[in-house]
Length: 147
Image 1 (spheres, rainbow, N blue to C red):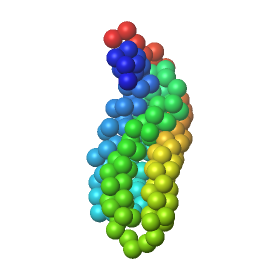
Image 2: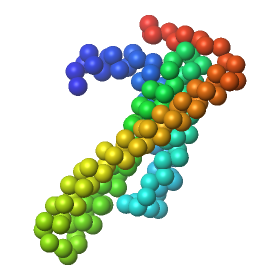
Image 3: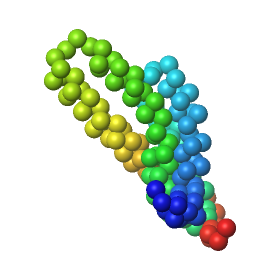
């Protein structure tokens, strides 16, 4: 990533809200999934962070759905923590080599699908947060993008 791209992301209020909310959801996501590494993942922490980010973004005049989507994409990154354990488990099974290859390829397809699913759920949650901000009558305050 070039320095100019990083600078644009840092100056974008949408990315700023999404990054802070996504990173803030890491401890809750990891705590909810601490005992079940390699099993199902609970993304309710990501959805909650996207709800809050969508609410705050809408209060400051931003669209809440893109903030929620990006929060979900960032907040779902702890899913990657379980990938080495799953690969180790697949490689340790007594099975034909072709089945091992198929399993690893399926994992390579499945992980981005999980991240995408979390992003879509978070986008809906962010939209809900924006709706709550609009319904509670908060004034739309424009974000200062010059800082």
